[in-house]
Image (cartoon, rainbow, N blue to C red; front, side, top):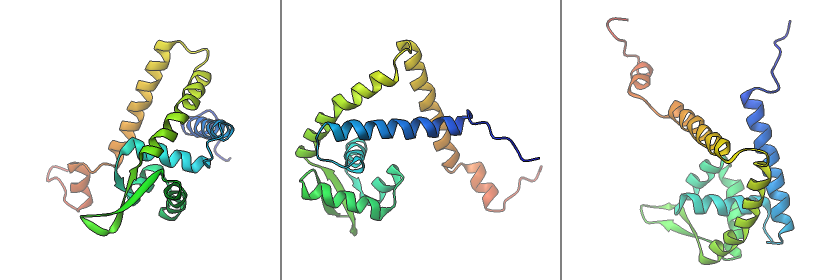
Length: 165
């Protein structure tokens, strides 16, 4: 008999929330008349979040392929919202900087984000919302720690075995 999947499991629920939230945010930013594609808006937000960073690091943090991000950055750079410059430590790499004009566009996105947060948190007590946010941050940290190299995992991966094992 095939395994039954729980459509309300953590993974499905998280994916549904992410997809629905992104679609609604994209709709609202389009309606705000900012002249940005949804992907361009996300790129600006991530560039602001992580600060000056290599283009490949920005792509990784956004979960995008480098070429997908490059196309978005081309559009943003043409509009003067970001600037790409060679990394002094590695001239093959590009550093992405948010410009003052990019910060102004982000300031226009903030009310859209605030309105969406208000709508998605409707009916949830403020203290419960804060607790939810803390729990989600813990889940994120747990997932990051799974990927982070630990001395134990490194020792196991190198073929070393504990003598007591």
